Amino acid sequence: MLVNKDNPTRIDFEVKYGPKTWKKNGQRVKKVAVGVTTLYLVDELNPSGYAQVLEELTVSGGTTNLTRAYTYGPGLISLRQPGRGSGPCGEV
Image (cartoon, rainbow, N blue to C red; front, top):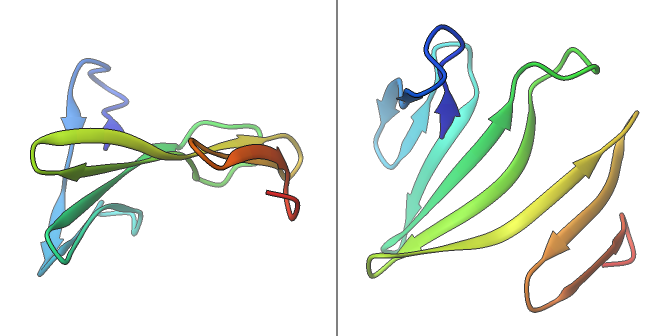
């Protein structure tokens, strides 16, 4: 799931290859596997100059849940997984 740079109220899903959806620039924004859809919220405009996934959301049976939330600084600082806690990378 990506916010369109020219129109911040529009969400873009660009190119579909089977169960995966990619933006034209090569970023995966959606994956479907075993009846579960995973959506990726990607920050394209961050200080690193690289696109980074901020959140992963799963959709199953009409319910959307936050699966992972990432915090970045110069690199990945922490990964939060609801129900599993959070902490510095490598300690989750």
